[in-house]
Image 1 (cartoon, one colour):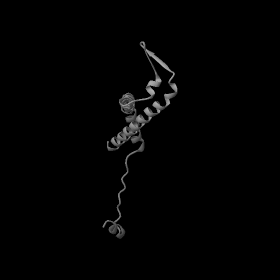
Image 2 (cartoon, one colour; image 1 turned 60 degrees about the vertical axis):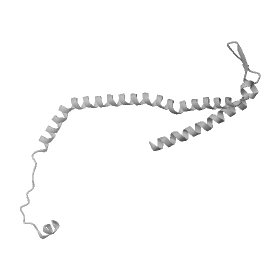
Image 3 (cartoon, one colour; image 1 turned 90 degrees about the vertical axis):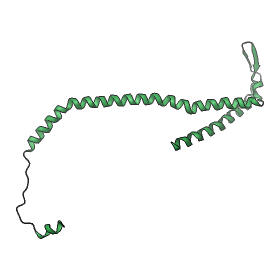
Image 4 (spheres, helix red, strand yellow; image 1 turned 30 degrees about the vertical axis):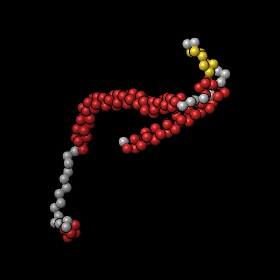
Length: 142
């Protein structure tokens, strides 16, 4: 958790620097588009008016880009990870179900194989040592 928090803080700092850089680049590169006229509901304006940002316009622009970067940083990973986790859990449940059914179906056959193997091996033979213990055996047990 500590590493994840550090990672998120660093990503937030990088996002803030990127947002300032994107706004500065956008304001600089919009200069060649002074002739472009945009008409929205009867209101016309040019991109040249937006190229020169004043006072609070910079704050709003940086804030908008920062908000977009925060959404990309926090919301998108969770939106991708939650469905993937659900799919992985469903696949895992299906595999456990198939394994359980296979164990139930195969258990009589496995029992039969074990019984045949035990009968084919024959009775267990126990070796009995009738000789007296030697001196070497007595020293090894100490």
